[in-house]
Image (cartoon, rainbow, N blue to C red):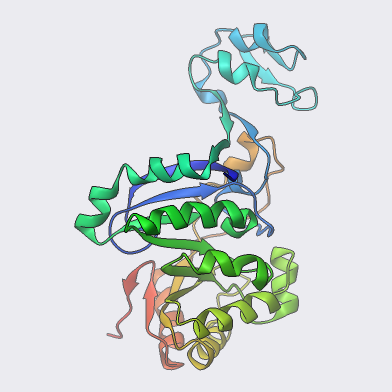
Length: 308
């Protein structure tokens, strides 16, 4: 049985596919988008999260750390990340939840059974299970086994993905996935690489192959100020999708939001300078209008766009 690592489970979600769903967030991603709001999903390894505001100053972590990475200075908890080996003994000793391990390993069967606990809610709402991330396809074999078990149990399956891995690696996952929610962040390969670390060539190829499988696709673009928030960019993506993806259900625009900007610091990561303002609703409507003019059915954050 294959093992994999996730960093969160979100129950009763209505934002990750149709109906009421449980979303499992996979750890590790092959892209490094500076606007990412799931910093816990970037690294593949388990990580130590430290939230100073939750610390009660009990000193249990100081006593439990063999490296002396924790100190209490004038009543303030100080963590020396350079000394930390991430043995996680401090998190095991922490009473308040100020120190937590981010990432938990599961066997595929165990995770699937955990997800099946909510089956009655899926059935009554037309929902199911969504695998998200991080990047699900970086743990493709684990994802395939989990989704296969769920499908055999009659559960609707979906993934949220950047589709940037080789087709032969991800095709087995697609065979047990009922719905693919895929990101296309920019049409220009160079621009895409500069922002994410990878070209979009593989993404475009995989989208076409998915559509040839008649796989339902929700194509999504995170709208990032200064990167892709122009009518020219959005209409180009929409026009390409209309031309190449007959199985696309709709094109969804997701406005940038600053939620999660504090997460990298809590994990000891460099805080990226993304001092961006979310796009205004009227600007999002203008972008949706451009995509609609290109022939796409458009939604903004799940809500169907209709011209006034």
